[in-house]
Each structure stands twice: as C-alpha cells, then as structure tokens.
Amino acid sequence: MYAVRFQDLSFTWPNGEALCSGLDMVVQPGEILALVGPSGCGKSTLLRLAAGLLAPSSGSVERPKGEQAFVFQKPTLLPWRTLQENVALPLELVGRSDPAAVIEVLELVGLAEHATKLPVTLSGGMQMRASLARALVTQPELVLLDEAFSALDGLTRRRLHLAFLEIWRAKGFSVLMVTHDLDEALWLADRVVVLEGPPVRLKQVVQVELDRPRAREQLHTPAFGAQLQGLERLL
Ligand SMILES: Nc1ncnc2c1ncn2[C@@H]1O[C@H](COP(=O)(O)OP(=O)(O)OP(=O)(O)O)[C@@H](O)[C@H]1O
Ligand SMILES: [Mg+2]
Image 1: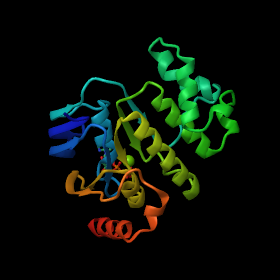
Image 2: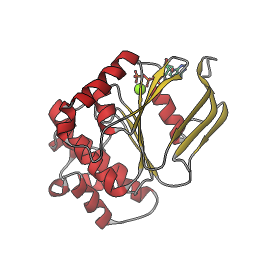
Image 3: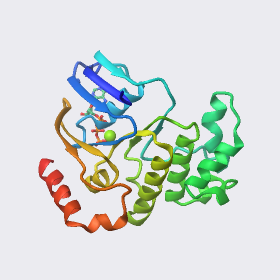
Image 4: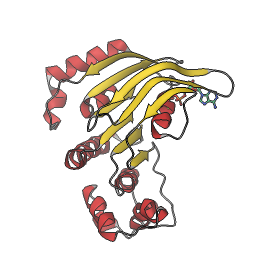
C-alpha cells in the first residue's frame, strides 16, 4: 500500500532538459513526507507529477484513486466570493452541495465566524487557512502542499502548523509537501527527503525522530536541534 509511488520515473521538458530520470519514491499511506532541496532542483515539478498535472516521460506515477487536494504558496481565493462560497467551490465543480461540510472545514481552520466575509477583508494568514479549508472540503486522501505556509509570518505559521497537524491526525490523509524551511519539514513530517539537482535526485531520506502528537516544546529540545543540524549539513 502507498499513497503515491514514483517508479523509475523520468520526466523531460520539451526543450530536452531532464527534470529527473529513474527516480523511485514512495509516500506511505497516512504519512507526511516533506521534500526539501535547493531552489530550482525540481520540487514543485515532482509535486505536479504526483498530482497527475504532468505526465511522466517514462516510468510511472501511481496513486490509488481518491480525492486529492493541492495547496499553493499564495492563497488563490476568488475575490468576489465569500469565504464559504470559496470553500464550497470544489464541491460545486463536481455538482455537489454540502453546506455542513463547508462549515465543518471552516471550523477546523478557525474561520467559521468569518464564513460570509470576502477574502479582501481578511489577513494573509486567514486567507491561507481558507485555502486549506477549501482543499480539505472534499475529504481528500492525499494533500499536496507547495510551500503552503511560507508566505506567513513566523507566529501565524506556527499556529497554522499546529492546526494542520490536528486536522491531519483527525482525518488521516497522506501529505506530500514541499518546503524550503528545514525547521518546518522536521516539525511536520514523518520523513524528510533531501533532494539535489537538477536533474533531481534523492540525496538522503531522513526519518524524523520526534514523538507524535507534536508539541510546541519539542522545538526547543536537543533532539530537534540535532536533527535540524543534520539536515542543514546535507544541504
Ligand atoms: N517549461 C520548462 N522547460 C524547461 N525547464 C523548466 C520548465 N519549467 C521549469 N523548468 C526547470 O525545472 C527545474 C525545476 O523547477 P521547479 O519549479 O520544479 O523547482 P523547485 O525545486 O520547485 O524550485 P523553487 O524552490 O525555486 O520553487 C528548474 O531548474 C526549472 O528551470
Ligand atoms: Mg517550487
């Protein structure tokens, strides 16, 4: 069983440059896997391949059929729709209406009381939370995050990390996330894949040795510091 499996994956751009060749990687069901690596090494493209937004040139990308959700760095809310109308959009697109599900995910991200507001009246952190709610409304089995937290200030980011971990624990979906923040990778993930390239290759896979559920205090433990140093040395 796996949530995503890259097998002997090769992808070549139309200009002939290779993004990757012969890449193997698995996201286990229910795990949070973080991809880190230098800018331009191919992280976002791997995410798009995992999502099926790009097709491999050879080899395969397999994922069990099921809902998936993609969250990008910038909140991509429609400005003329209220929060609840934005969050309801993925349901509408498949001809469904489920107001209870919309309110549930807005509650999960702490935005229920703002449901009828327009995005422009909300802070960046709140808009990001709304994007997350919109991603979760279809009950995805796989969530793909491309630097989803990186536009937020430090304090907001920490809060959203904890909220995300709680939702993940409650819902049990699998996560493939890209981040340039090593601290965030360790804090959220079960495993961190350190990439190099282009062409992108797996440099090392690091098992995160931190208990679940994660608690804020762990950030200041020697164990966390040691793992962070280990990752920094790899990059
Ligand atoms: N259409 C294209 N044709 C050729 N090369 C491309 C094309 N689009 C992207 N690339 C190259 O693919 C590589 C991977 O890009 P990608 O956006 O996946 O990197 P990334 O690791 O997400 O970078 P960042 O950390 O800056 O977001 C880059 O070197 C980029 O120049
Ligand atoms: Mg990227």
